[in-house]
Image 1 (tube, helix red, strand yellow):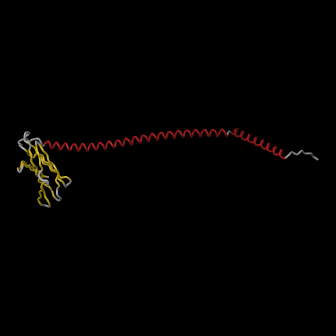
Image 2 (cartoon, helix red, strand yellow):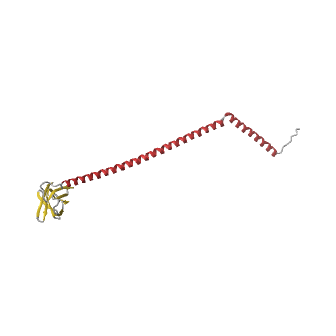
Image 3 (cartoon, one colour):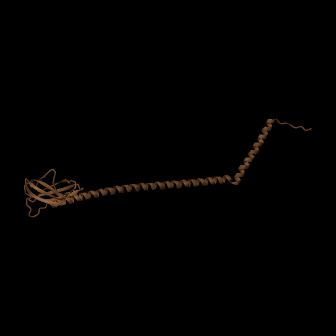
Length: 226
């Protein structure tokens, strides 16, 4: 016969729990010790450091690319502004050229007008020095008459200018005068009249005749062919 001492069940559970806890602590210590020996934690730290360095480098390159993009955009905006300014300057120059051409034409017309004011030898009294006629748009005839007095100290002349238009209508002779009749003119040294004459349809104007009237007397006559 053997005599055994029996422990109560609560004490048995406590002893078993202590034993399991002690074994678990030993196992955890062994695992940590083995990982340190194998260098696993050290390798992970190195990988993390390398990844962080690569990330920092990538971020630096990204910032550099952004700066280059911003610089390129600024240059493009400046170039666009320069192109717009150059285009506006060219358009302004083109307008100035057109205006200068128009002014030049006016000066030529005025020069031709004043050249006709130069008295010719043997001219005395009032006379028609210039008669011009030109078709415009095939529908209107622009006419101009220049009357001068060669004598500088001559009295003012008051008279009328009568215009007669001659041509062909359907193969037959055609003539017409200004709808308003003769135009009044007053001349000290020179005077000029001009206007537009509406040419009827199917009429071909061949010539224009101007007569300077002093009352019922004809003081001068001039004709021009078209």
